[in-house]
Length: 137
Image 1: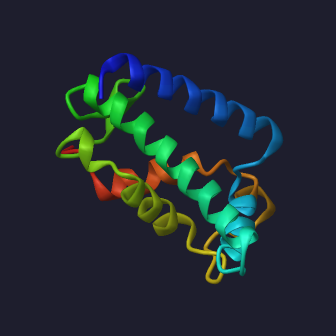
Image 2: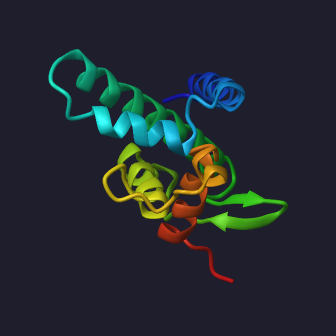
């Protein structure tokens, strides 16, 4: 995929995160709510699964773009925080696993306080990815 396409997708993800931040559409509590509906019969379940998949795919592509532009490192404040072996190692599946590693699932939640439930899902994604792909200290 060329850089222009990835840059456009990154801008779309940033816009999605900004929108979700203002409406809490993708906070941990809403993520749990969507997970509860994934097994629903019919369009409700399929729609919930698509929303989760699209969000996780968008996050993975944003992380891939940043890692690919920075020698496979994602840094915060100049300090490497996530160091995958390659940018392509960050997939929708690894982002999903990273999120669940930190917050659990709707059936077995690790985040239960009101403050945690209002945290944007991107934050546990970053924490989880840093555990999956730690940087040498």
